[in-house]
Length: 534
Image (cartoon, rainbow, N blue to C red; front, side):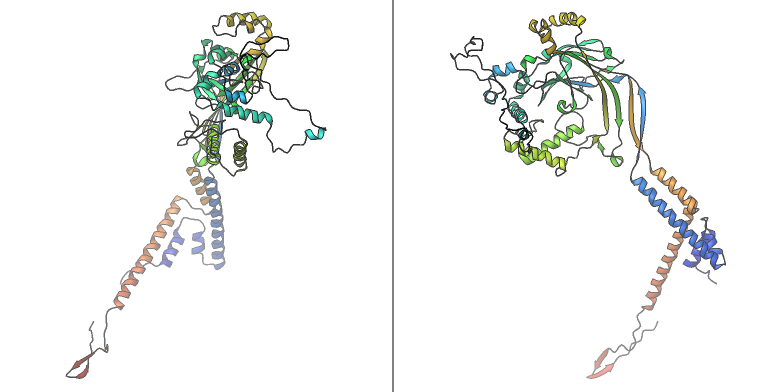
């Protein structure tokens, strides 16, 4: 007698009686119908709640949450890069010497008088032949008939100062790079004294670059190939960077330079500085102190957050990725695409021309800014995954003290390219033209902010296992029992399908009887009967 083959029903009952999952054996083995219904409903309810909890856990994992760890550490610190710029972009007297007709016609420098023409001064004296007339800034007229007219603004027209600055920058970019560099304030004049960590330094320790707003700028401790960056071994002003700067206020262009002093940017040595948006001002006649606290931020990026290391990104400015560099690149690309020219406030891309200061171009630039602001144009510029933030505590004190004046004067008078006796011997001129800048770490402890995954795959599996055990009473071995059951069911179904195909094949054996096929012999029709014996 052949062994009875297992069926799906018998396999299902066998699994229900022997599984280690809670509730199922009770529903299968009990003889009482009410109890069977009770345990069946209870198991289905528990399993449904487990599915709900499993969905919640999977959604939690797919959010990719992060933990933010904050630590206070102590060590010798890499000193930041320090960029300084004079508030005036070009030297006034040097610009007059060059005699640029464009700057003369725009009113930024005076036009030369014809030879032999005298221009009496108010005191009756006459200047030398070939002297220049004095350029004066336009004054506002007093034609308003009431105070209400002064408040009637429609914001459609541009302010005169805005138009003047745009006009100046448009003329500035028409000069060659070498001419702009030679017309700007020179590092050997600007940086009168330099010391770092008690050691002497000079303008040769600075890297020069050109900024569209401030002209020549100078960076200390910039990352350069093959050079080791400076580190701070102690805290306090004596172990930081100390500078005496000569701003040459008599070289300021009257129509452009509305403030006197230096622009200072403290930034990561590996990123490019943007003095216009990132810096602070140091005023003449004062000692400006900037005490620093470092915060180092490390973000995960990828699925855990929207940050980037800049890999594969095209940037307009050199060095590592920064969000400001990316935004400047994006803005310039939109300007070139929409307006057909490059914004004069940013670096000029290869193969493009700078925009002029015509109203149509200025209007186009404003429309680009508005479209970027309202989201019609987008810039994909996430924050950097690695950031250094220098928190600054800035203080001002009058400099030099009365008792220290003679000491400073004696040092500056020995300089070959010093301010000169006309400034050093005049206390007011001294205060108007010189300033001191101290930049240092307040302490060598620093804050690190690091992101780490808050919910990883092992956390998900552990929570799923806990929920499965709590609501269904299943473990990993119970899951293997379920897998074994599913394999048995698959084998049974496959065998049934295979037997059904064999049976169908037997039933389709050819059995031809009295087919009605007709043959002929001697002109008579003869029926042919064929029978195939099985």
